[in-house]
Image 1 (cartoon, rainbow, N blue to C red):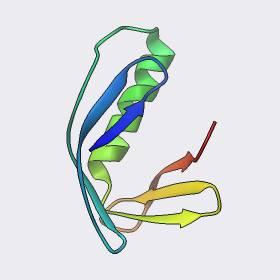
Image 2: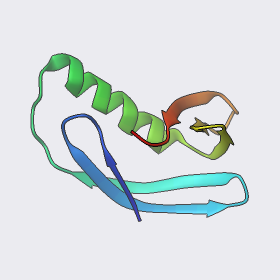
Image 3: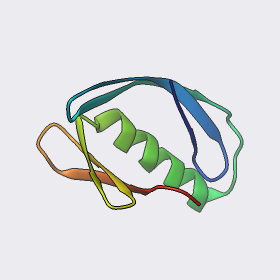
Length: 79
């Protein structure tokens, strides 16, 4: 079970991991409107999650890659 906060809304859903292969199921979330910029940021994040097929960990970062090996997101651990 994965749970994330997109900056305004919270999202959760299933995921599957095997080795460095990673994929996310459909994400459910709250649907507050938080302004155009933040709404666009959250949509881009959800698109990256949907495109994720593998990952790597580099120091304090989780790096997500799509099926062609292109980086789609870089997330920092901690606060």
